[in-house]
Amino acid sequence: MHRIDLRSDTVTKPSKGMLDAIYNAPVGDDVFHEDPTVNKLEDYVAEMFGMEAAIFCSSGTQTNQIAINVHVRPGDEVITHVDSHVYKYEGGGIARNSGASVRLLDGNRGRLRVEDIANWINNPEDVHLPLTRLVSLEDTANRGGGAIYDFEEIKRISTFCKANGLPLHLDGARLMNAMIENNVPLKEYANQFDSISLCLSKGLGAPVGSVLIGKKDFIKKARRVRKVFGGGMRQAGFIAAGGLYALENNVKRLKEDHKHAKALEQSLNELSWVKEVIPVQTNIVVFVLNDHDRRDNIIAQLAEKGVYVMAFGPGMIRMVTHLDVTSADIDQTIHILRSLS
Image (cartoon, rainbow, N blue to C red; front, side):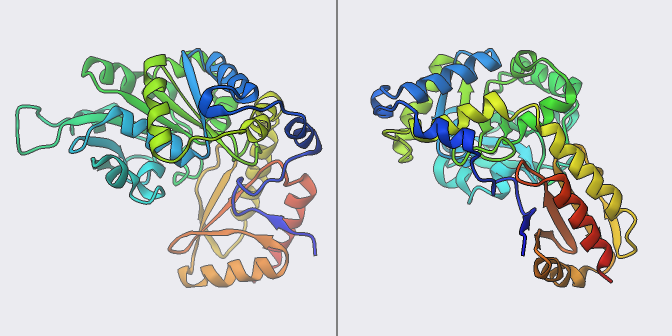
């Protein structure tokens, strides 16, 4: 049976072109800064974003947690959305790795407004309160169904953070999905942030890796934290080559994933057993069932027919399109969805 895996865009396999790039990558010891492919990837990403430097890491969780650790000290407070990946899906890393507390804010589909943030800046003269030290955003917002930030709101948040001496971090796990839709110049977008985590192993299709981007002094500190976290890698060029190939070849085609997601959204909205589909902006489709108790049964029925999806909360199911999902796969998925009673 042909398998259509829509659980996540992390399930992609390297293409022949990517495998060739990996196989032929020149390598060295990255801890000694001697891996030419890693160095090339870091320089490529820093230039791409118009930022001073970058560091290659094994995962988006690692780049996020390194950034937070550099920005804050134990006892400080991080402001982020209640559904943010840095809080919800990184194993309590903010507390465990950095000893910091978290101010969790609600917002529209994983996105914050400057007014939300401004209301929760702690008075530094009040010894009862932790010092507010960092704001962290997520674009696109995973729990928000791949929602894209309004760039004007990002600029307002950035201006506020600069005025208040607060670093602004971006979890850009699926940032290129946002950028391919919002048409904002990448360097102008990146200029709003003090640090950016860019994942290469989601929609971009690399097998491993994320890149953390920022100023030279910030990345110098991040390199030390990466070592402390056990993230120093040796001949890492073999995996960096996959990320470099992804950035050079797989960005523009993200539009195709978004088109497929919109097709799924349209079909799901026609089904009587679906209560709601969160409006699709990128490659994530989240829908809510009329009968929440049917969630696991629906997932099992789809799996029996070769379509794999993911539970995403009470009565909620997630589908994620990616480069290994073809138009024919989408048509087949829609056919199967319509066949379910």
